[in-house]
Image (tube, rainbow, N blue to C red; front, side, top):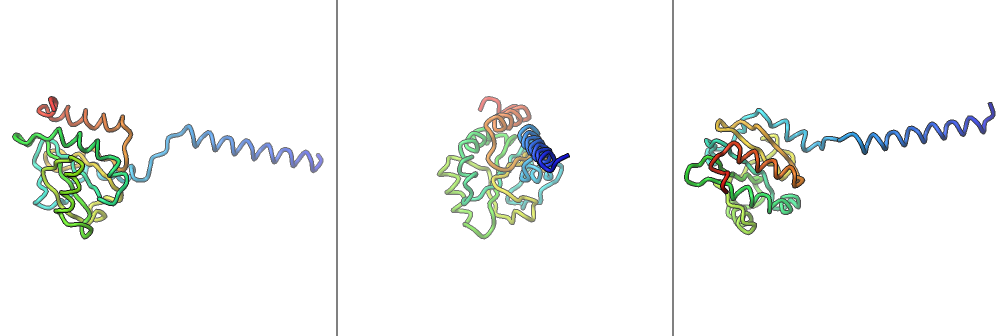
Length: 177
């Protein structure tokens, strides 16, 4: 075998490997690290302060930062989620948690109000102590405060629709909202 044939075989081998890796990368779905971390919240009871009490059939906790571009891009969805709130029965509540030390709670409330996101409570906490490593993060909690679903980042519209369906399924009073 000549050196030319060996070189051709090596080039062909490298090309097959590159094409194979490229196809694998495009065809096999990857989990975003933020989503992996969000799923790590499932089953945990978040140590939220009394000011952010839970006690509803379903509670959505929105971990958000005023300086987060994905939070700003997600505001129309959070406005839709906030419209499901059941003020009288408290069956579904939306709570906001912002990073401590950045803005005041009044500034956080103003930011949410500017985007028409009404919440039932707001608190400031250190996100990393709760296992939150990206914003926005949305966690759905059951009546005992245990996370049963969580998502991080700007969500595709299909996922947003699924979240609305989950809330409506678990909160009959939210169906008409």
